[in-house]
Length: 107
Length: 119
Image 1 (cartoon, rainbow over the protein chains, first blue to last red):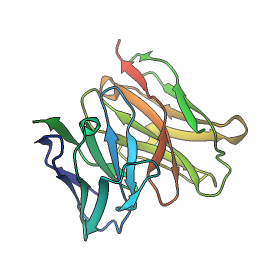
Image 2 (cartoon, one colour; image 1 turned 90 degrees about the horizontal axis):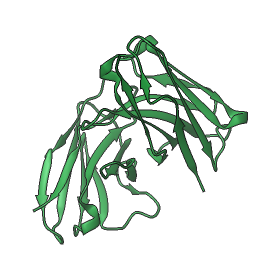
Image 3 (tube, rainbow over the protein chains, first blue to last red; image 1 turned 30 degrees about the horizontal axis):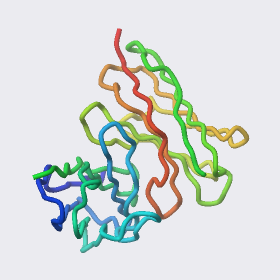
Image 4 (cartoon, chains in turn yellow, green; image 1 turned 90 degrees about the vertical axis):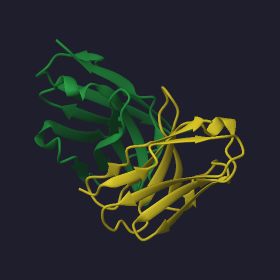
């Protein structure tokens, strides 16, 4: 199985901050990576697919990038609505796998 | 508008079989490139992919659950069914179904259904 390792597990930040979440794959997954946002009691929401493609309707402050097996999700200016848990998911090879999540908290 | 909704029992006993139905609208599972998958999330824990079935009936299930899992589709009813045998308390989780398009992640999700395994 391809392991997806996210860091950090928890991130404390303030409104307006630029934050970066990292996801590292245990082997090459090309660009077949998605990022999701999940709020308590809600289903995940797709933010980014194919490593850097912004899902329709998602604010442009969200962006994704890739370098080899390391992927990043950047929020350029954190908004109150962005405090949530974020997951990466690879869909290059089966079984598809998710990272363990990064919780973004209010500092 | 695309919607998905999971239905099934909220409480099952250990060793029983769980059958969950995902009823969807706004898209067709006979359209090239479309798939529907199942993902679960134990309380307070991370997401876990379970299975996916595609428009061409190609399907994959998580090898960690192996023969316990079956996924089928009924294109005429716009439904996907997940069956999980020999349920155990560790299978207690919120189960989600979600749509995906080839090349993308899961772009539309159901609200999820909490399944508790307890005697």
